[in-house]
Image (cartoon, rainbow, N blue to C red):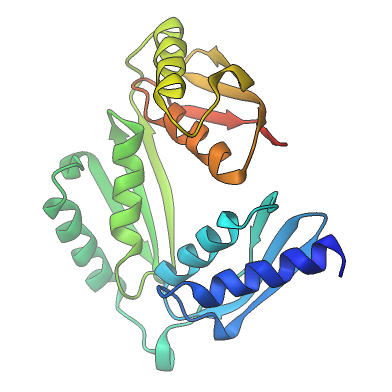
Length: 216
């Protein structure tokens, strides 16, 4: 069995193993370590879960997400109802500055806009909304308000890397251009690559992260 065929089987097994999604209608293809997911699921949450499951598999270099969201029985939720639910769920989440976030819904696609102080608030707002029934996709246009100097950002990211049991800070180079962070070097797995990017996004003042890390 070729490396790609072996990886294809392991990704398919992981999808079927994940209890948070129904993988019966998901197709998997692999070329040179790049996984393409096709087919359809009933919710946006399942679509996101499928991508996370694929990325967990050792050997996966990248994931192309082509899964469609098809609501069960073609049942559609009205855009105004989705918008009202989105407003409520953001109000309930104390980690999200809901007053700073504008919500627009068109054909089940939710667009978030506005300015927040931290990157994790942007990620949390997107996570909250994409759990809602009837949501087909989320476009996150939230901006992070710059707060720290480039030297401060670099220092805080380095500190986060050194505290992490999963990351070898000596293998990761951190560059900053204003509020943008560029990560380069080599890591041992896709999970470690994501952990490095998450540490960068968790630093106050960061508005963009370019992840150039290669998987050894």
